[in-house]
Image (cartoon, rainbow, N blue to C red):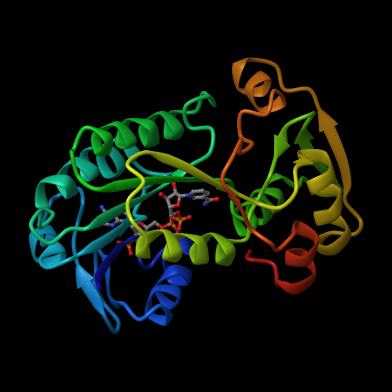
Length: 253
Ligand SMILES: NC(=O)c1ccc[n+]([C@@H]2O[C@H](COP(=O)([O-])OP(=O)(O)OC[C@H]3O[C@@H](n4cnc5c(N)ncnc54)[C@H](OP(=O)(O)O)[C@@H]3O)[C@@H](O)[C@H]2O)c1
């Protein structure tokens, strides 16, 4: 099929494209610059070149996002622009990459992702919304940034279930090739961890002299993450564990 991946230059998109190609699809890779083989230009904020990028796409995997910038403009309004620009006669499946817990964890970025899901649910397009847990690389980066010299402070009791980005990419490629679900599905890593355990395993490999310090994190955000709001309740599981990731991957920083 003719597949368009938005966010193809991102952490996930770069891993997703080869899985889709291996499944025999013709893949176009959308980003703002549209460079590289198979690259097409499209900007979700200005709408520029979106119609051209989406023309003829039978499957769209929508992985573009702006977590650190303006997700209300890129993720929410941008998804609305995407819905308006898709080729409704050709489209067989639109897969949206979302995050487990966006309906329960009180973070502004998560609220924007939830609003983007609502845009898609109201679109009457053939959709599957795939909520995924945090990628190993993302957790790796966060822990690297959290370290303060000999100390690694982490929130006490937060529960997470990180997943390997390649397992998530393989799952998304299989989902994109299947029939649309019409609603929300989940995908997570193989094991639940406390953030403290995650950090101790990280420190053993990345910063052996650092000492993990679990600190109380009051408020609604802390309570939600202690209650398991970021854990998948159902759906598929990746295979690669956090320990296997740490043993086999260089530091992303
Ligand atoms: N990171 C995680 O742990 C995690 C976990 C679960 C789910 N997710 C979800 O997975 C998806 C991909 O995450 P990621 O970590 O791969 O993100 P990322 O590395 O930050 O990549 C973001 C992508 O979005 C594109 N983009 C940004 N602004 C754009 C715009 N105005 N128009 C078109 N494209 C734009 C970027 O392309 P250019 O800058 O090249 O234009 C880039 O390809 C996101 O929806 C995220 O919410 C992430």
